[in-house]
Image (cartoon, rainbow, N blue to C red; front, side):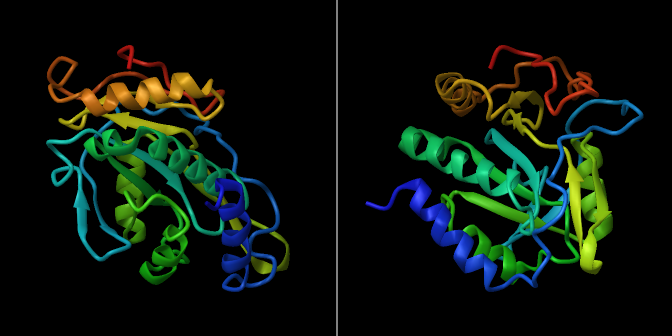
Length: 226
């Protein structure tokens, strides 16, 4: 059986053939929040398209809990590492992971075409769906989750993206439940995902959560003990 680390090595070789030299060099993706703290709650309308060509929106996701992670295919480290670790967690959960949806939301729609996303996602759990949109739709999704993404130019005329890291946990009614931090102990992460899989009834009052991001990290305070 191929280990997750072997898959990571194979994946790196495959993607390297597609990317122009220098695209994955430069600054690492940072988990920085905006200088000005956003207002409003986490969760809201967005409309995107999956790497399989299916429409995905906040409305279509209603009825099942889901998790969402912002990233991009040219991400040199944090994004693929997070996705491989999530793949490993979902594998351990087995059929229980079928109870929630999992999204990678691209912050780089200019380069992340549907075809490239389709190839990129072959390395991860097939239950994880990559979604993209126009720049306007991408900005709307970022706003819905109170996340940020900023283009940073690198040498050779290329660029990388500094963006909010961490995995958003949303209940079946699209309400924010907390964050999954890949630096947490493995058992803590598994417990959060098991709890997410069991969320069927909204656990908060009417309206989206009013929790605010921690400006100094990628974590947001949990509003419920998920």
